[in-house]
Image 1 (tube, rainbow, N blue to C red):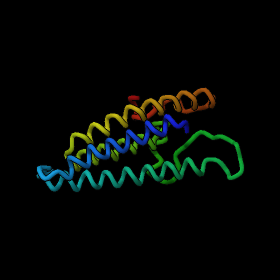
Image 2 (cartoon, one colour; image 1 turned 45 degrees about the horizontal axis):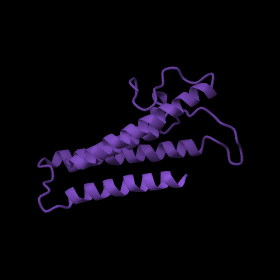
Image 3 (cartoon, rainbow, N blue to C red; image 1 turned 135 degrees about the vertical axis):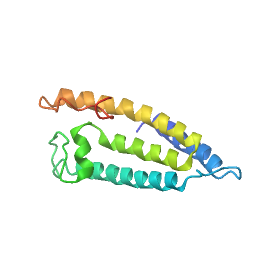
Length: 152
């Protein structure tokens, strides 16, 4: 990773972390009044993180050890990988879902801004990977989108 990217990435995460932390730890912070909102968002957050882990494991297992062979990422028997049927980068989809859930769980505007900024960057990366997959694999699934099923 180029040094300028390291500075940019660290700044992004540290500054947003400070911004979110300031608001969620401020004495005037008010948590959502509805406990159902908190618990539902927490459950969605956990499911999104398990989905993200499942995708990373599926991608890791795509290439046999010591091989340079590249394969089309496909769904496995793990239901969390079924998102591969609809998008090229389900790890980004799950990441956005996790941060959206966190934003709803905390009712924190800075967390929502972090989610929007992260979604924008991941959408750019996903579209690039999607284009590369379509170029590299002639039999790449036609109906897949980059990051949001049926949309983007």
